[in-house]
Image (cartoon, rainbow, N blue to C red; front, side):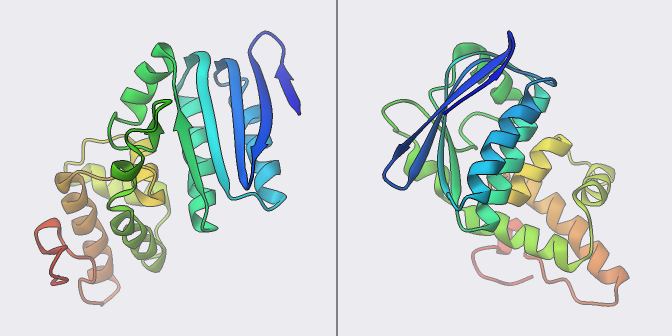
Length: 204
């Protein structure tokens, strides 16, 4: 299967057992990112849950492209699936290193050396997103609260934290937990989100 955005994006889809491998070539920008997300979304709608996004031939990717990847990863995680970014080019890795910091995302080299490490701790992110939904906060609402409390990550990164695509640092987790617990206090409830120091013990 081949999808093409003139002069910008082409994507070749292949299947390896239950895994979908999408090899992207060209540029993933504000014009072509919706095309990429639409291709991925159509495959998810068909029931596929395991994806590898090959970016070795992507020379340029911007924030819109990174957001499309994060959104698709979040949708897959909510369905029990997974999206892995593999072999990003130098240009793609540079942008992903800003929008999706290196070592904190499901980004793999061709030899897959980081697969185990990048999956560690995703349960904590799942807990954050469950708490966000329970507190009736949108991602934008949570970001404003997080930012007001001194959070330094971008709104895109915060969405990725919630979706489990990135692992929050202890500081990010602390600020997010505080923002969520303040919201629960407003609702007349206890502080159900553990702070980073207490995450292992389960104490609030």
